[in-house]
Length: 129
Image 1 (cartoon, rainbow, N blue to C red):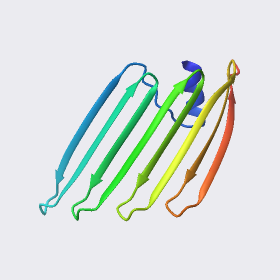
Image 2 (image 1 turned 30 degrees about the vertical axis):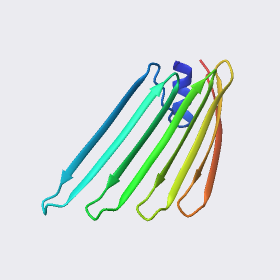
Image 3 (image 1 turned 120 degrees about the vertical axis):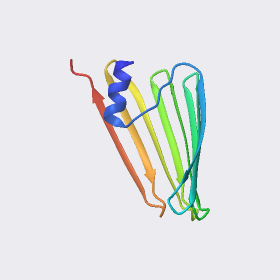
Image 4 (image 1 turned 180 degrees about the vertical axis):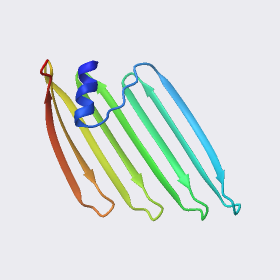
């Protein structure tokens, strides 16, 4: 587990929750002029698979959403997520980390912006102690 966390820290964050769990939350904020904004979200994890989603609605009724998932099994972890703004523009990202040998990890990922541009990155980590 320590090796996985080290690799995740070097290549990008990965969510790992060993037991089943879930939560939901909602909040409302009222500003000084009486305008309100609301936020809601939920997440759940079971058997190495986690999902999350959330939304924020501003004082003028515009809503932005986020969602994502992560899973780990047999030394392979993947994570993906997306966000959609109030005007419908979407950004997405995806990452994966794989244990290639004892103490060695490799990872790759892509991110696509709201205007359609994509960036890819990759790397590897080797434990040296």
